[in-house]
Length: 335
Length: 298
Image 1 (tube, one colour):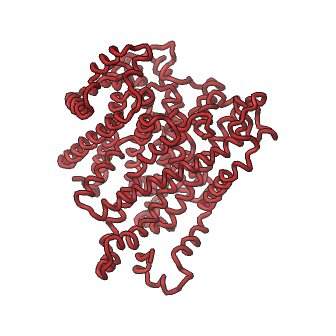
Image 2 (cartoon, chains in turn yellow, red; image 1 turned 60 degrees about the vertical axis):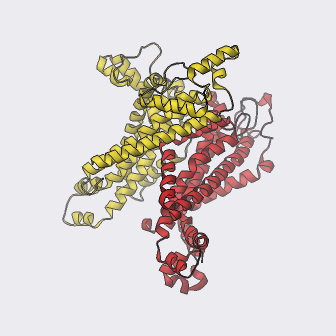
Image 3 (tube, one colour; image 1 turned 120 degrees about the vertical axis):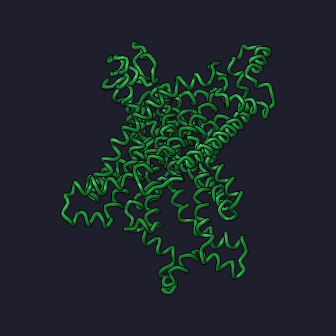
């Protein structure tokens, strides 16, 4: 186990190095001077030069990269050209919003995708199955940004059933920060108004973002269940007179879960990509929106910060899933 | 010769003659996949619409008729008109051209580059393999849309740059896929046999190994067509791809975002077109996978 974790950690360091190199290379390709752009049209030549020197952008590219990596090892991600704050501070502000949204979306997709997948497999080739597969097919083929806009237009602007963009109504102030997740922080502070409001704001973006992973999970669950349902030991279990419910829960569902769990891990990573579009539509102040604005403003130190975080989160989640695997399934041995 | 593996492992298939060529067997199986046929029909319809856009569209896609601003669907404007009085139906037809072209070009580029790199990694192996696989690791660690945005942002927002960006993030999948296949195939008996009778590396790769990697490639490419169309229009939607007034579906949805419920036709029709085309490719992908992966045959 220790060797497995160490090897994964080594791989992670290599990937982080590669990701930083790739993003750095992209930053060098930018045809426009981001510093001049950040200071605006009225900035004098010497002001631009001074800001560039302050950011260390006056040095040759390899030197810049060496300095960047040196700082990175001390936990310093550099300074954002646009917000003029340390990138780490920006990330600390924006990351919790994305985590909260992704977790909520994950919950939605697990609660919808797995039960529907099980149902579809048990009633194979029925209307239920056809509807569930249709639901999954649309989820994989619909532009997420249209669904987001439509949900906002109907449930917020027209029907007023749910709150609109953002994490909290403008009239409310954010709960005291503990985790950065508004729902949890509000609950910890006993601020029920803020909790209800934050949860309400989460509903639409989480449903929209979660639908797409729900579609993937549904398909995975259905096919995993079908595979197990065809096994000899399931027939044996039925033959010895076990109730259908017992066969399904004890024998089939349990054995169908491992590949589904892997998919949950994989989709969690891909939620960040979906979050870019969802956060843009719902004005959700998370990493996706931060990185979009940063790219638009050619703020590459900020972009590098986000990509590094993403590069860590994705393999980390998958490693955790692999470790979880070996704990629940004695057949799987890692190392 | 193309399907050496099949002929070697099932000698009976060769005996029956022309009846059982791999292509015919494929067509026969494909015809049993109802949903795949539906997908194929959808794709053919959209390809026809895109090809005949010039003939079928009642108005030029960029022509403005301000008096028809936000006109609801009617006989004059089948799918209504947008804020500038441009005919939505005509724009959808030209948009089909753009979407199909983006899908096809990205998939072609990504699949060719990925196949080349994957073949090198799998066939040569050793240090090359290790290096190439670690590079693909880096690409897999990136959320693909963010990397594509960063590339498109660095190159400057345009449809062409969005294409390049999506192609750059798409090739590693093919590289991994082909490498895996090559690794399995290069030690198979029919490859050893070919080598024993003196076929060179190029011959082995081109005539024996690559043709056998084709089916998983085809499945992946089919799914990727849909994925690419969604990704490029997503990039266009947030401003990193095609720019207004291009009749690109993502741009059209972005332009209609403030009219989503009251003037629903501005966004609904591009969204449905995208849904249909992407569904078409996904259905074909599903069908191909079921046919080509015998384990899934039930």
